[in-house]
Image (cartoon, rainbow, N blue to C red; front, side, top):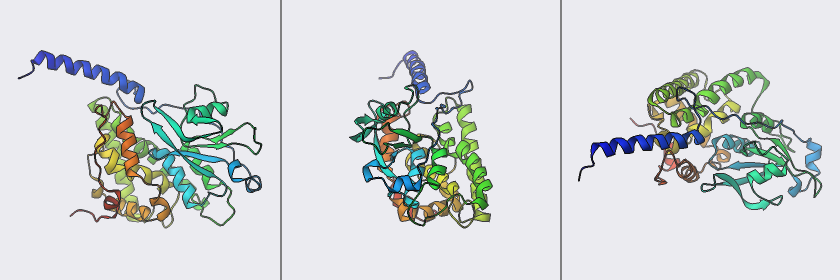
Length: 328
């Protein structure tokens, strides 16, 4: 039985109206339908001294709170592993509650069950979004006032690179490459890390086309640089630039290509990027931070306007994607 054209037209108009209404809450846009990431009030970073941290018990140490699926938190997790910070900074992985639309703790901490409760406990204005990553210091005294030591990823990757440790470790922002790292940071943040969201949350064809073009132009620049100056973005050593790029590109086939329509060019068409990703993933400390099933569950399960059915699709095996050779 065919559906009358009037019903089809009416249903399509009604769904489009409702979809835009839902998307306005998920990903606000400008007047042309281009996604604009919501601004949030970040707390000024505060770093305890090495002496202060080393006299604390394990329960008194500051904690880095992350969500497995969040790419912005992923970059801080990688630094935590690469620099071996576990003796001076505890890692806490929290869970996304799809029904309530918030981050919740697996076990209560500081008498709190959710991230928003922790923000309130730290006396942060309730109008502030409770986001990850965030570093929270419970304080040395049992009933002291906990503080947020930083809650913005671009800020925290620099903080974690200087975080006190009691052993020799790597410097991911050497002075010789600071200008180059800043240059890459600007390109990656706007055109790649945020660029995939511009594609996924674009409200019309023109906005999507513009975002897709910007994204793949940036990948072309990365490919060219790696071919001339590799194996890493700043030459022969891993820096903050590589850590900024990796969480986005490792989610490519499992999330951003199928859900955000980042599909104009398959990633294997960028052979130097493909090799770079393989090399990065081969580092054991990095590989342990990657959980493609958690990514798919949170992205496809939580972003209701983009996938109304709530179906979480089967995804390719991450190790096969990363370690396979480029198709011929």
